Each structure stands twice: as C-alpha cells, then as structure tokens.
Amino acid sequence: MSDPDQLIPEESDSDQLIPEEVEDLLEWASMAELYAVGYIRILADAIERGDAELQVDPSAWENTMAAAAWAMMEHVRGRLHGPTAITVEDIERMRRLHGLGAAALSSGERPPELYPLALRCMECLFGPDWKRAAREAAFYARALNQGFPPS
Image 1: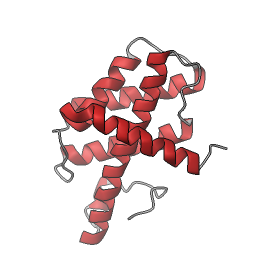
Image 2: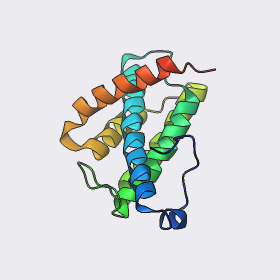
Image 3: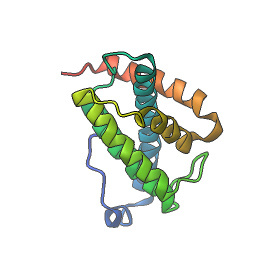
C-alpha cells in the first residue's frame, strides 16, 4: 500500500501510474474515507454529548479530511466505487465539514450546523449502513491515535 504521508498526486499524475500503483492509490483512498468517517463520528459524538474536548487531533483531522475529499473526487471520476454514489454536492458538504471541524478543533467554535452536517457526510459515504460503519471506523481511528499520540 502507498505511504499515507506521501503527497496526493495531481489528477494528471494518477493517469500516468502503472496499474499496481493505481490499485494501491485507490486502496489508500478507501482507507482515507474509512478513517474520515471514524474521525467524523468521534467529533459528532463529542459534540452531541457536549464534551469540552472533541477528542480528535487537529492534524489528523486535516490530513484525513483532505484525503477523503480527494477520494470522493475519485468516486465522481468513476475510478473508485463504494456503497453510495458520491456527488459533487457531497464533496462540497465534506469540504464544509472539514472547515467547520477544523475551526471547532482549534477554537472550540461549534456552529449549530456542524452536528447535522457530520451525520449527513457519514451517510453520503456509507449509505443506510453508515451508523455501523461509523462505529467501526471510530474504533479504528481511536486505536490509530493510541498508537501515535499527538505531539
């Protein structure tokens, strides 16, 4: 599998990859979506409970959400397939969530739309089974964070 810390290739670069590299990149994109849903779930649960601490490392949020938006574009381009048909509107919602979540993580600002937007974004990625998928993804995201504590 490709190194997740490696820069995401531009669209033209991905057209020049050999088939094995494309397969690795698409596997990486699927994992990015899974971890994005995990972080979204952790954030949404903390907001719903009214926790002061949102329990997501800001740099993990930034990296994962950027990767998920890229992966969602791969859905739109037809290179990646999942349980739902991703639309450009879904990508815009995810980008909005990315920004609102980053603001909440850095300043604590939690606009009323943040929680329902988080739920909608999880649903756009995993369809009607989003609650189960989000619980499992949150488990993996927490486990990943325990292995690599924020600095």
